[in-house]
Length: 40
Image (cartoon, rainbow, N blue to C red; front, side, top):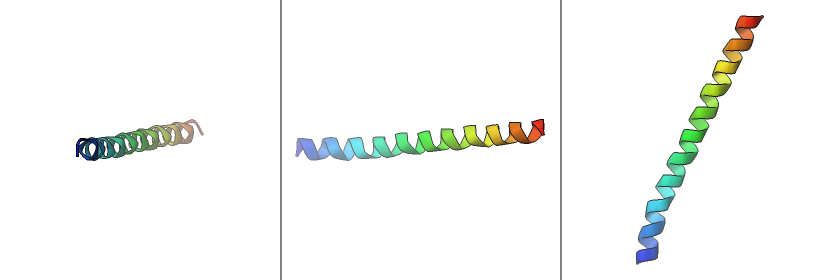
């Protein structure tokens, strides 16, 4: 039972971390694209 509760707690945390990393990467890519477009 304890192990199951631990997994239930870890999985959403890992999902949130992955979502945060994906969002950060998207923002960085968007900024880089805007910067290269402005330089042209």
